[in-house]
Image (tube, rainbow, N blue to C red):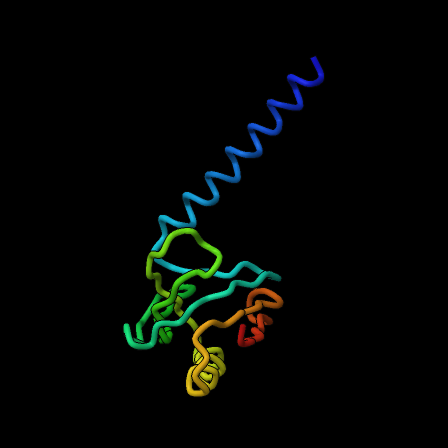
Length: 119
C-alpha cells in the first residue's frame, strides 16, 4: 500500500512539474522570479526596442530584448522586458560580443537588483 501512495505522489509531482514547463514555454515573455536566475541567449539582430507597459496603474518605459531561454528545450524566441539600469548592464555585455548571459535577480519589489554575467 505504501508503494502505491509513493507512486501516486511521484506521478503527481511529475504532472505538476510538467504543467510548470507547459506554462513557461507557452508564454512569449521571460520573467525571473525573486532570488533566482536564468541563462538567456540574446538576439540583438532581432531587435532591441523601447516599449511602454503598465505598472501599478502607471505607464513605464522598458527596454525589450529578443532572447532564447538557454535552459528550455523550446527554441522559441521570447521577449525580455527590463528597466533602463538592467538594460545598460546587458548592453555593456552585448557590446563586448557576449550573447549568452546569466541574469540573477536578488530581492523583490523596489529593492530588486540584478547581476549580469557572461556564460
